[in-house]
Image 1 (cartoon, helix red, strand yellow):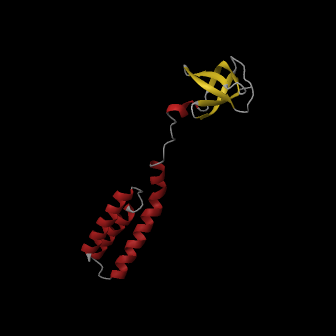
Image 2 (spheres, helix red, strand yellow):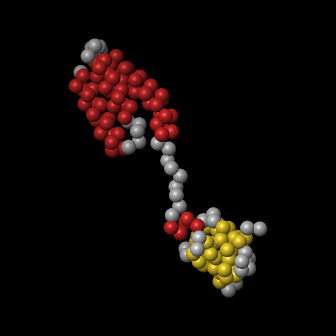
Image 3 (cartoon, helix red, strand yellow):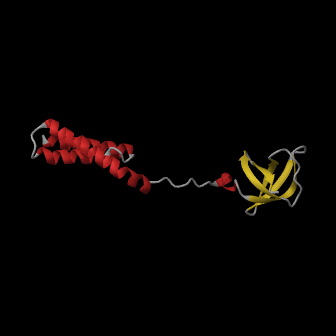
Amino acid sequence: MWQVWLILAGIFLIIEIISVGFLVFWFSIGALIAMVASLFIKSIVAQATIFVISSAILLFVTRPFVSKITQKDEVVKTNVYSIEGKVAKVVVDVDPIEGKGQIKVDGETWSAKSYNDTVIPKDTEVLIEKVDGVKAIVKPLN
């Protein structure tokens, strides 16, 4: 019976490699423990019980540690979305009626629109709320 447990361990390992969720791995280890037990215990029910219990224990005991180690890093905004949340300075009045407005942030000049359709005069510091197409949506800091 040890060959069956070894084959099951291999199958679980292959599934883990395909899924990369680090969940099925513990069933592979549980199958290896059941394989060792099968060398001493002839009862298939006892072997299956050992497999289920050892897999469950490994899963529940190690899952918090694995979750902590494999935490997802914070998403880093790149390209145009990297300016969201930054402070900029108005270099051309932001006027929603005329559709004009420019800001300067990180040495770059961007077209801008007012967040609440108000006029924002030149030299005002603004917060970039979001980017809509090629225009930064801004609101005054005060």
